[in-house]
Every structure is written in structure tokens, then in C-alpha cells.
Length: 405
Image (cartoon, rainbow, N blue to C red; front, side, top):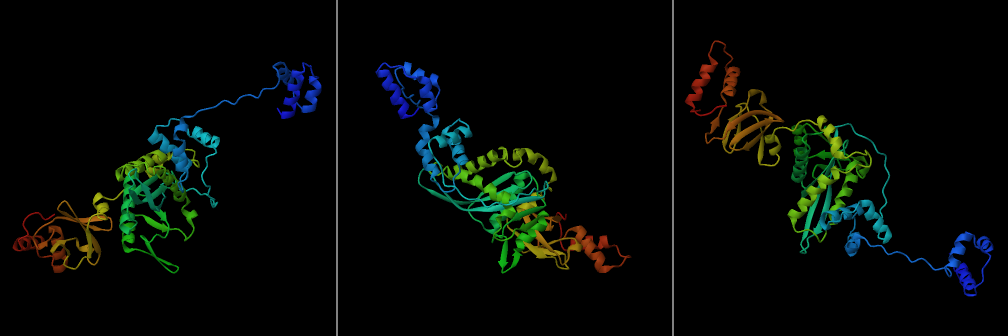
């Protein structure tokens, strides 16, 4: 009700004059019954606004400080309040509270791109969220990186903490991811990160260890076009979840607390309904995991984490390991094999195939009996001779006692 009609009603009431309510209603475009009600009540009295309180009021200053963090998201602050401050309200109530207090954060423009779907088990997208830092409540700054990955079909996310972005760190995080999801997709898509590829003008050259990793795991690591993040848009959009961690700035205890937050993030986001699929990633993953290839033996995977050697097999069939020699089958002559020592056992691989194991020994020469017999048979090529008997005698002469696998 405007000031003019308020003054008019008050004047008539004070003079004890009954006005023409119908005329006043037409003049001010109001209901005559409303005018009469206010006149009978002694004039118009503005309704007092009710004051509302919210559970979030006690966190108002904290919310304001979190909104000042560059890159933080509303949902990130919401989850921080739920996990750390015990807030029990819904996300929609939290957003309504922000609107009622005119609390906002800077908005960023998004470059539009066409979405596309990927068959189950075909692709994993991965990237680094680089050079992150977070301060503990004691003023210590923790600098770190996050390896971010997502299965393109189910949208299952996985984040891995890392202090570096080296080739070794990238491989370790990839292997950690495959162990976590329990299988290997047909391809992994990423950008031209220096830990994987050297870019020489228009030519891209993958590192030798990356090429070997592809062979060992049976996966193709594909590189997207330079300055075209939309080609791996799913993992680019997944990085927005990382901003939730920023809401914990000045709140965490130490590195172990940060690792627990990352672990909780992995669980939380995979149980949230995806806006594109309208299904939680963990639900769709139950079907997609059937399309993943099995992980090679733990020994092969560990070879990228523990010390290992590679060498070309000579005509003697013997490869050297820590000064001693161990045999492999004849068909691997002139082929490069990988030597992996775990728990005093030497494992010898050709690509992903385990071709021979030996007890690690202090003997200079360690032939497997079958390898030795095969080598003699092809070297002598005399069917009248008992090759097996000759082999046994030679093994004894050379003191090949003990286990010959």
C-alpha cells in the first residue's frame, strides 16, 4: 500500500469521516474491502516483517571467508559444512540461504562444446590438477597435485594424491587407478603432458617407458589435440570436484587428514547422481566393469614401482642379474625381456608373458633344465644322441645342484 492511500485513510479516520471506499478503490486500483478493513482498524498500519533465523547464521563469517577462495564452489562449501561443522540441512536450503544474504562468488565463463558418449569399457580420461596448495589450521602449507581420472561411460571418478608429476608418478597413479577400478579399459585419453610425450614441433614422441607400459597392459594411451581440452571434456569437468577440497583451507590437521578428505571425495562424488546420465556413477560402473580387461599379474604391475632391468637375450639363453646369469627359453633369443625380483624370486617377462622364474642364487650360471635341453638339441641336431642324458651330465659337471625350474 502506497504512502498516499495510507495518509488518506489516516486523515478520514482522525476526522471520523467515512470515505467512499468504492471510489478510493477505483482511484488506487485496490480492493474496497481491504481499504475498509484498514479504515476500521484505525488506519493503515504496516505489517511488521518476521525475523527468521537459520542454523547457518553461526557459520556466516566462515561461509563468507570460504567464498573468497579462488576456484571454490558452492557445493564444495556445503560439503565442508556437512562434514566438518555438522550442518544437517539440504543443499537447496544452503543455496537459498546464500541468496537471502546476497552471498555470491565470482562467475567464470565456460566454453561450450558438443557432448558425446563412449562405449562401456573403452576409455579412461586422465589429467593432472596441478600445483595445489592448502594450509593447515597450524599455518603449514601443503603443496600437492591430484591425478584426476574418469571412466567415460559410467563417469566413475578417481583422484590420487601425488607430490610430483613425473613420468614415474603418472605411471604409479595410472596403476593405482586400474587397481581401484579392478580392470583396464581399451584406451586412456590425456593431453600432451611432458611426463608421457615429447613434443618436437608437430611431432609427438611417447617416452620408451610409456610405450612399454602400453604393451604390458594392453592399453593405448591416446593424446588429444593441443589446446583442445574439450576432447577430454569429461575429466576436465571432473576437475570441478577438486575445488571442494579448497573449502578445507585453514581447517585440516595435516597431510593424513588431507588424504582422508581425498578418499572421502572419491566415495562421495561416485554416489551422487550425475547430471548427464541421471544415475550415480557407482551404479553404472557395476555394468561397465564387465567390459574392462583383467589386470596383468601383480608382479608385472609391481615392476613399474620396484627396481627392474631389461636386456636382450643372447644365444647362450642366459640373461644377467646382479652378476649372475639365468636362462630363458630359446625362442626369446634377440628379444628384450624384463627382469623383476620379488621375494628372492627372479621373474622374467616378455611383454606381459611370464616366460621363466628362478630362485635368486649366488651361482654364476643358472640354467633351467628344459632351457638347457632345448638349446643342446638345436645346437647338436643329432637324433641318434640322447640329448636329455647329455644335458643331465653337463648340469652335474657344472654343479647345477639345487632347484632348476
